[in-house]
Image (cartoon, rainbow, N blue to C red; front, side, top):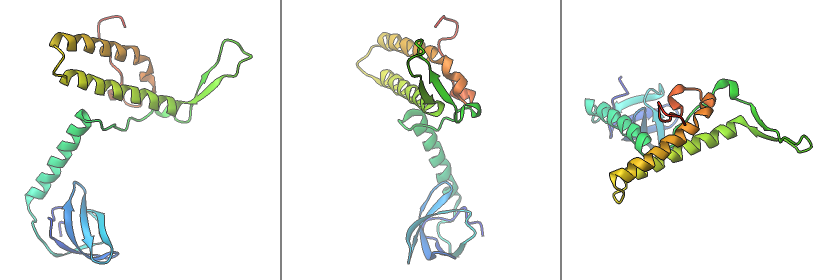
Length: 180
């Protein structure tokens, strides 16, 4: 049985949860209403599932999955959803030490992971600000460009922290060709 293309209404038997009916289809899982265990989200490739009566088994199920994947990508790009940005391996478990010039004063220790989290939050908020500026109907194009230049300069000022990121795709990029 190809259980990755089952549709809503398909009756199933699960070795642990008993009989159930698919009530929702997601990219990699089914939402199944089990008679004795309520609604559970089950992986499409779960070997404990046995099909009893198939329903709506069509290519459209996979098309829905592709649409869902595309929609999630769009929401990540344009929504306020934050993405998981990994810290470089060499920094995991590290400490940022801020030592005052006066040796009599106690230094401040900050876990690199906490500091990195703050940097990523700052980047995400700059992106939201950028989106709000670009979608603002009251600002003229000239005003949008002027504000955008300030944001670009902020990104340029933050390039020092690129060393903390695991992947180059997450780096800050300022205005190339100008002094930041």
